[in-house]
Length: 237
Image (cartoon, rainbow, N blue to C red; front, side):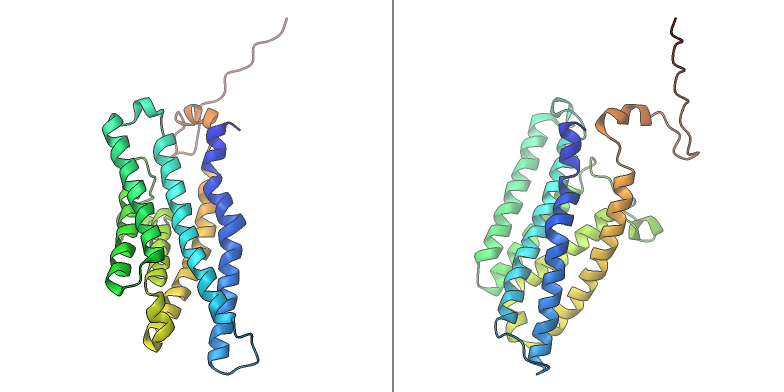
């Protein structure tokens, strides 16, 4: 494997090593928090606080992992000198990336509802803007097609939106029952999507060739599932 191949597996490695264990902890603490609110069993008083704190880190981690994947895909798709749009486009994409990170950091710190809503939307729009670039592979952009609902990309965008919702509405979730119910529904949907992401991500990894293999695979006929036969090795004297 070359350095570029290691870059391509940073996103799934981060998901497996950090995000999915964190998802399990957040889900377990969320269930315990609901049990404690309902008076079921004797649970530690810090359960809800721990659930909130880890949930914040999970949301930030999902956003960071998504940004990492998009940056690697866009800027390693071809040599930087051959990037479509040249330096101006690269600079614009860099500004979008920095703006998205700044919006996420601001969301982490602001208190008022309007600012939290605004920075949540800015963060999600920044990720969608990077994801809309032609270098980013998507099975389909048509919601009426089956490929759209099997797309790792679109499931990931939906999860990012749900995580940003939970992060931005955290104060309302803690203080109002109807917001907590909405948060539970969003969390269940996110859990289903995370399962789907694990499956579709594994599928996509099978289709990801090593850097030195790509040129040869471009000659394959993907519709017929066939490739040109390899040249016969020359006989040794």
